[in-house]
Every structure is written in structure tokens, then in C-alpha cells.
Image 1 (cartoon, rainbow, N blue to C red):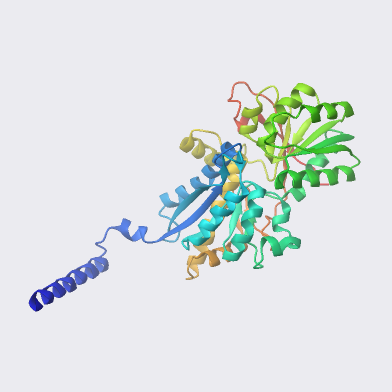
Image 2 (cartoon, rainbow, N blue to C red; image 1 turned 60 degrees about the horizontal axis):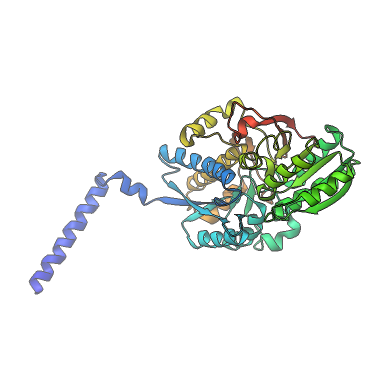
Length: 418
């Protein structure tokens, strides 16, 4: 027995020496070495329900950047792997803040996750931000615009540990709502407007900021109502609005209520100018409401319009080739969000520090990266320093699919800032 034990020990020692020699000579497969250095990035979006189609375009933009980086050998010797989690539920019929919080807890429990991309909606963001703060892990949202999440006044609620963790590659509704009110006053020459929202954090917030600026610009707010996304019939409210004869209608909200609103508002007030924020800049909105109900609607996005920019065409072509569909502008802000995280990994590794979530958060805070939308840099609260808001109008192009964002939304220009 003793002799057998000695032979086994000797055999193990020889095997270990052979492995060490193979490593020294570079004989072990390179894939094995690469797989041992993997960093994870969460992608948390509502892929179930009314927001799913637009969330998918955001996910695809982010994963395209990650796939391209891995195809070039990774970042600073690390393979980047996405962990995609669905924050939409069948019960909610759209994004679900409770599910977003559950997803976030799952991500922060995995110490291999160094950052997150998302959420799509501000209601999710409010549920996620405090959890991220406790974990000192950054998220970069390509589309969430409620200003409260990054407002220092609410720091104890949304970043109790002090550091910014909620970064954006779009501006906030502190600019998107007011700038659209400027557009209503200066371009549509509206003197009276009726305001609706869908009761969500995004919808209420952007309707609030629109209303305040509209009044400052001399527009009279005739009234305001809240739409329940789970209700089917808004005709009572719309009939009341018609009787007040407003110059325009403004809607703060997303597709859950928006598609029904667009259909029914066309039946009741087909010629009334109607508009909203980026919640109505959506292929799902176009497809759900259909034409002619969608025709003529105005929409904003909280950033520059890039899809027609010559510098963005390699991205547009790569996206279409990979996913067999056209991107949205928020596909680009998601792509850029991923680029910011990848750049942070590269810069941390270059200093010799471990690219963990703490060091990645610190590196994101100091980003100064040229991307498709220009140079991305953040203020101390995590907000992007660019304040551009773009305006579109739906003009039906029958030669393209009804939900083709690139061709169905006609770019009007940058919204007036003052």
C-alpha cells in the first residue's frame, strides 16, 4: 500500500511538472487561457410586454459593441460576456420595477459583473439605483430620462453611498420636456394644450417638465389627465378634451397607453396636433397604433439624431447585417454605453489595477470618449454633459415597413433650448 501511494504521488508530481512546462512553452490552448479571464456586463431591459420591440433594439446595440470587441481579441486580455435579464413581466404588460430590482440584486450578487447597461425606463431605474449604490456598481442607461434619479436632492434615496452609479448616454427630461414645450410654442404656435400622462415615473416626470415650460412660454394648460395603461377605452377623456378645443395635445408616457391613445385620438380629433417624448418614438408605437392614426405625431429623443449621419453608417450597416432590421437612435446610445464600459475596462487594466466593479465605476465617472454621438463625458451626478434634444414627426412612407423607425420618423431638427 505504501509503495502504491508513493508511486501515485510521484506520478502526480511528474504530471504537474509537465503542465508547468507546457504553460511556460505556451503549449496549453489559448482558448483556455482566454476563458479564464472573463468580465461580465449586465443588460437589464423589458424584453416582455409593450416595450419589448424597442428594448430589443437597445439590447442589440449594446451586444453589437461587445461582440465586436470580443472579435478583436477582447479588451486588455479580457473576454466580455453579457448577462441579459428581462425586466418586463406578463402581469405588468410592460416594464416592471419590481422585476428590475430583482434582476439588479441578481447581478450585484455575482462579483464577476463589473457594470450594467440599462434600464430602458425610468420606473425601472428608480427601483434599481439604490441597490446599485450599495454595491458600488455602475449602470449606464441609453434611454432612461427621469431627472430625479441623478438629482443631488434625491441622493439619499437613489445613491445612498454617495458616489454616482446611474450614468446616462442621453440627457434628461429636465431638458427633453421643456425643449418640446419650446417647440410647441415657437414652431407649432400653440396657445393652448391639454396634457396627458400614463402614471409611470417617466410619463409623469416629462409631462411635469413640459407643462412648467409651456406655461412659462405663455401656453395655457387647459387640463391634465392620467391614463391607466391597463384600461382599453380613453374616449370619455378624449371627448372632454375635444370639447375644450385645444391647439395641441401632449402625452407623457410609453406604448402601453400610447398606442391606444393614438388610435382613439385619431377617431375623436384626427386633425389635432399631437406629440410626446421618446416614449412615442418607437416602432412598437407605430405598429400598435397603425396608420393613419400614427401619422403626424411629433416625438422627441433625448439626444442627437444619428441614424442618417454619414459617420454612423458603418454602425447602421453592421447592425442591419447582424440582426436583419434597422436600428433606432437608442440602439446607438446603447452601443455607445457599451463602448464607455469597454473603455473603462481598458483604462483600469492599463493602470495595473483589477478591473472590478469599483474601479470600473470610478473610470466611467472620468470618461472622455469619442463615440458615434460625439465625446461622452459625465458630470458629478452621472448625467451626460450634452443637452441635445431632437424632434421628429411621423410621416408615413408606404415603401418601408410601418414600424421602420429610420424611415417613418422624419427628422425635424434640434428642439429650441430657450
